[in-house]
Image (cartoon, rainbow, N blue to C red; front, side, top):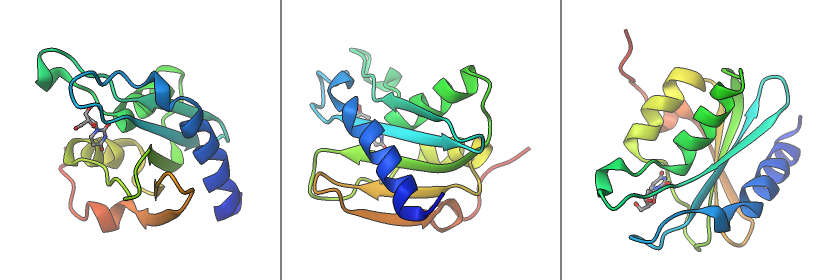
Length: 130
Ligand code: THU
């Protein structure tokens, strides 16, 4: 799939679910979509908790959703927020991406439908591994 096509597929999927974000504490809605190497799309949103540290980011929820459905290889991941700025993934999500999506293209996007593409290696050059 071409870069633009991948972007459009993941962007439309992520945008569609942004209002499912459960973020009563930060009011910062995030959604993410991943493309598996078999061509399927899985999505996730951030889910917060009154015990703040239990919050799980959109990226991890998207990846874990895919893994729960038997998919462990990803070619692309997109992060969507309703902001002008691009939202980079947090450190915890980068480590999870290193586990399942080390070769994936990471698309950071904004409300205007613009994007910046990074490799995970650029964002997270030296991950922990066992
Ligand atoms: N958040 C994500 O979902 N992904 C990120 O990469 C950064 C932060 C969420 C967690 C929390 O619900 C809200 O954004 C504010 O930190």
